[in-house]
Length: 300
Image (cartoon, rainbow, N blue to C red; front, side, top):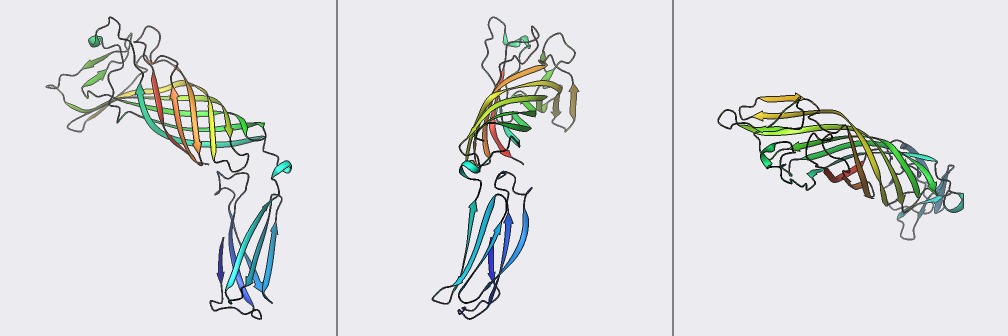
């Protein structure tokens, strides 16, 4: 709220001082989406005989704007918002929505090589962890279970995983009976990038708790998501700038199931996803799994 006086000099009780109030009115029940419910309104307060008050009320709040002249002649202003929906009168919405964009790291879980030699090539090669990135965007609807603080969340998410290989000379073999990679002879062709990118469309189901029904500062949600592989490709770039892409499923599992943990403070979320399913289809690669963790922001 911004208050500006049209008369910058000290005011006396007998003076008429017009005040303009520019207010951004935000729906109290949707604190995560201020832009959607924002309006700008201008009110005038005329101070006469020392003080004046303007009231504005709606179904959720009553706002009292007060202005007066202090003993030292300075103009004073005050805003007070009374929330009508607190306590027993508050009825949380049955469904609310939220959307997130997240960015984090992608890691491979430890796996047992057994008696298979590392040169067999039917396992995911060692990653460059600093450049292996996970990105996701989701939209969830939350069903109220208990007083707006406990909700069941279900929605849709799109996950992109970027497996950046430590050895840039790795080449994946498409249309093979099992996941397979080979090493390109550096004397023939030297590359400065080699990676595998997967895209999964998923359905998350989470149980979430927040510390307040209105304007929560802390949230936690746990659950799982099941994803379906919609696209995957390998890409490598040679030192002279030539790029090569090959699209194939590379024997990756069609279904990926991840337990999910979200910890939110204000609008910033720490997330972690830990795979229960193997990276590859049955008998088409070693038993390897992945995990992701990072930060997400609320975008609605």
